[in-house]
Amino acid sequence: MNIKYSIIVCIHNDFSFLHDQILAITNQSYDLSNVEFVIIDNASSPSNTAEIKKVISSFHQIKIKYVFEDNIGAQFARNRSIIESSGELLLYLDDDALPHRDWLIEMVQCYSENNYRVIQGKIELLYKQPKPPWLSNHLEMLLSKVDLGNNTQKCNLGFVLCNMAIPRHAFDIAGNWELKIGRKGKILLSGEDSEFVMRLVGKSNRYEYMYCGKASVSHVVRENRYTKFYHLSRSYWQGVTDGYLKKRFPHTRKHQKGFIKHLNIGLGSLFLWLYFLVIKNNKQFTYKCRFYSFIGFTYGFIIFSGI
Image (cartoon, rainbow, N blue to C red; front, side, top):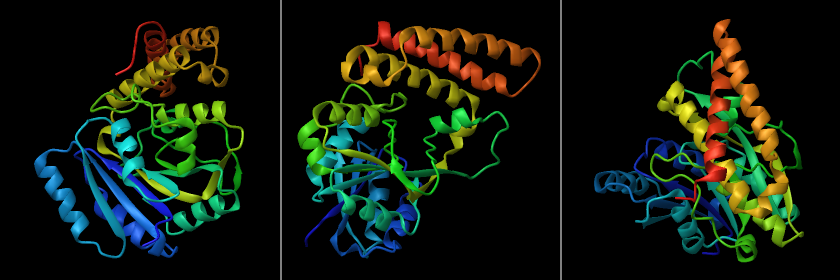
């Protein structure tokens, strides 16, 4: 079978959405004859691995390749996906992202116009519980929301791997996913998606970076995302990521705020957090999170050396 497109999902223990995800892929409006679905099981427990295989075995409408990667960490799983996949275009989905019916055909159309495109698809948040009043637009972005409308346009470098397509030859030029950042167990580091794109920008000027609003997915907001503890932790580790990238990877610096600007944002966030706390406004939690991001940024820039 001639495989042209590889849909890739990395799973660590939680397979809650796998059935719905495979179903959404098999129901795509695009002909799946040249498509494979690669599932990288990232060091799940034996019982969860058995359940993942059980879900996979119930589908026959699409070629599904299962691979077990025993090095825990999203970056190890994604690097394994480059080796195990066969397509010329690698389409990455988070394990809780449900693609809409025309997702694949829109990604393929955008790629077909120029096969030197890195594509960011639209990411909508799917709430299974009432959205908390303190969960602001800023915090939704940390939940991987990406919505620039339904059009196709050139994209900035803030890519999110939850719904992203990358030509295979881009990895030949830029190398694989960076191992020192990205999720690892409960450590909420991120930034490997943007770091890869920035590295590619530094090595080749041939690529286009596009946002495709019609290639959309629904990103399920998991149960723990409704807690303030999660958002404080997520904000802190995003700050660590930003600080570490600024220190470790010179190619990212021109795309990030300067340290003085981060300091101003941190002190401003502290003031606004305390102000809105006094007047009992829900905005106070957002600024508390932004202050945690500044603490994380300082640690990432000065001390943190990667995982």
